[in-house]
Length: 166
Image (cartoon, rainbow, N blue to C red; front, side):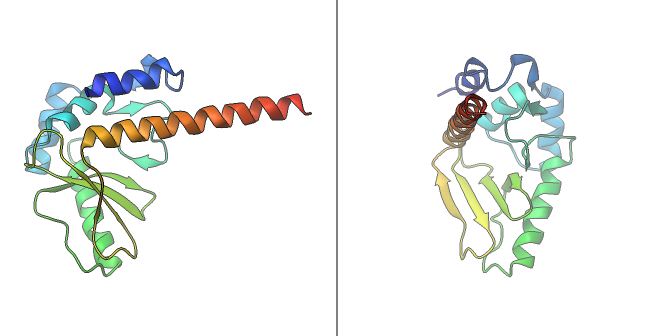
């Protein structure tokens, strides 16, 4: 499934307005890739080209979006530091790219060079090994978008119900 089609659901659901999707340019993605020192997967670059800088309320509270060319290398250093602090029994694999950090206690990574749409692994304090949660980056994006939209809709329903009972 294309990232464009997955992301279109963010807009068609009303969760995010199309003008809130702020992409990275090709040049910014190239600089980001140079900064990581590894080739980034095509599906990840496709997502960055649609909403690499921001996407409204989607993924707010987590570090996913890109601020500059050193963002991913900084996240990889942060992930390695977390593993050290947690005294995890495993290192971050070679060519791992920590593309998502959630409030300093969880992170997600893929291994660059393992395909255009690589598996996504989850790490958090107390885990013995990373766990593959999504078979592809596209599956991760689709899952996060579906989860975010469902949570938003249920929250909106609760708001409407509570306004009617006041």
